[in-house]
Length: 339
Image (tube, rainbow, N blue to C red):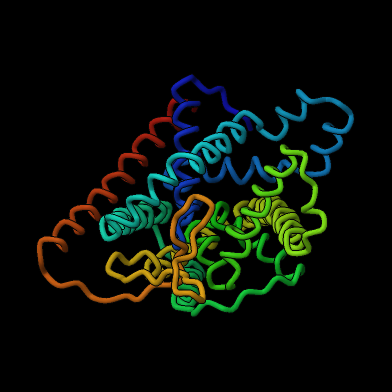
């Protein structure tokens, strides 16, 4: 159901989209967590599941206004606009701080995820046996994924399509980082670096009316990979939203308990005290993404020593928790305004 939004609500929704985009950029951090703690997760899922057969009939018949209203277009449009803005702005700033102040950035994220666990836990007044089992399963899955070693690159198109489905999971499943899963699948560089670079190069060639790339088998292969990956991502976004709408409607408590467990289990990925292992070429040089940032391959975790740097990191953790509490307060205030 669509809501009437003030200009401030629209602005905050764009900001939330920016936050989701920035979170999805970082391996180990889930944009879905942002949606949860900011109080618009269920509206996001319910809006996505409106992209169905009826919506396409409205679109094909030319009833654009009805289509826009049916899919809650204003909400989705503002949110995705924020994500696009994030890709070209905030994510680059985040890359800068991740390289120069890595410990403090991870500490802030760690605190925000701790705060989100507290926020989601407020849904539960009483824990039953089924929700406790769901919590344990979620923790086990999160921990298991956190400590897997990356696989080797695989450009099989069926596998690439599957990667696309999984890659958008971070938007719909809080605690499940799509970019980190792509690292584990071994296809982060192929799908988010090489294929994207191939698209940029192809667009530049077309602008210059240079079509020699049609004879470049490697370029064509990467473009095919990108198309299949994109189709998988769209399929995953719509499919997951329908699935989650169903289970949230029929198994809300169990679903939320599993999400809490998954977020708890994924804390190992965002543990602040770790050494980042970057992807390198055969020549020993860092592999860079389209923004010129180093590609993360995996992490080596360790326990911190008590020093000034550790104290500062703890302060950032507390700041992250405080940030989530403020977002929770604002989300509850907004909800009361619209009731």
